[in-house]
Length: 143
Image 1 (cartoon, helix red, strand yellow):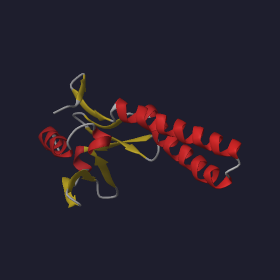
Image 2 (image 1 turned 90 degrees about the vertical axis):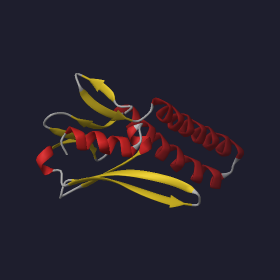
Image 3 (image 1 turned 135 degrees about the horizontal axis):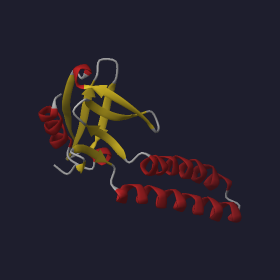
Image 4 (image 1 turned 45 degrees about the horizontal axis):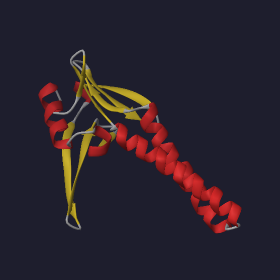
């Protein structure tokens, strides 16, 4: 398992490389917007500015809330909304499973944590680890 351990609490987080990549992408889009604005290309600006805002917001979320999932003896803490957190006791967790899909020769895994009223979905990029490994760790921990 590639979880970060602090006081025996496993935490899964977004990789720093991915956050940096998103921020650099936002800066590149902003640079293109300026370049196209100076060149008089309004259509390019209309495309580049929303792209810069969207990718920048995604990168900012990765910086503000890098830990997407943590498990302790009481339950799990998940990211909820843009940058909020929600603690879910083990008793409220109905199911922990991994959805595996194959498409165009690629395999993708998504961790699904069902709490009855919410379905929390995490990718390997969100967790910085394989969703299968994280699901196994959660099941061992108490889910």
